[in-house]
Image (cartoon, rainbow, N blue to C red; front, side, top):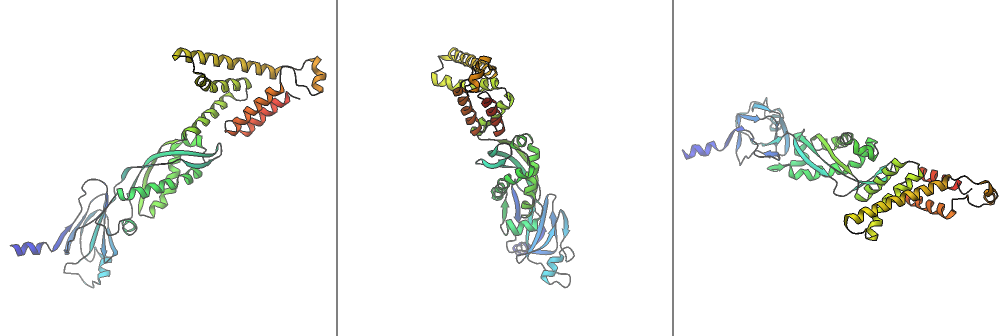
Length: 350
């Protein structure tokens, strides 16, 4: 009886893989010195593929199905073994199974902001994150390039490499999409499609197919986001100088309140806010009136002699120009907006 048990252990009648748990991409059937029986059965389940490897060389590849192992079902192995007729004895070969189901919810994200060139803002540093799904599409290529002769190959051993590929190609994807940052953040599906297009041929070299990719968020670092908020605010103001001064004063109120102590409690904050708004309105009204005041007839000679018009002081104009210059250097005003406001102010000095 012991002899029969020993003999049975030397031959394999059925080759199959029942996946246990998640995350295994490749698995080698345990031979343990045994041989495959002539006419044995190979069972490849849906979402699996299998390959036979003879002395380190990939032979036959099998998709889902049940196969009786003969020279007809193993043509490449038959050639490598130099079987010139139906083989009758057991044979040795390594058999690897591969999971071809989707590996979903693989995370990717930028650990540090990446710098891109944007047609609206120039150089921009942004962050992005999302997830993707992939599957093994070419088990022969995946075996030769990635998993090799290991007993098993888990997803965890590959995810770092794939994540690095995603991050490496973000800049190319953004450039390929042709979208400025503001449109990019609003069209994350288009961004994801562009990134998928960049990654597809790179993943294919590893025998992997990228099934889907999502971009869940695109954002700027905090300091750049503040500048963008100011830019958006100025866009709403437009070329109205009075509104411009009101906007700048409103932006300065929190800093003014913080520097002066802001009173006590909520009441103090409210008083500081009210005073700041009132001050902003007065300054804006005075400046607007000064810029719009016509030259009096009596002052015509003085104006011809180079004096400034009544109501507009040269030092006030210069101070305003310096402020506009600071806004331009911070990216809040474009060169065109700065030039327009500069020309408008300088006309008042002529």
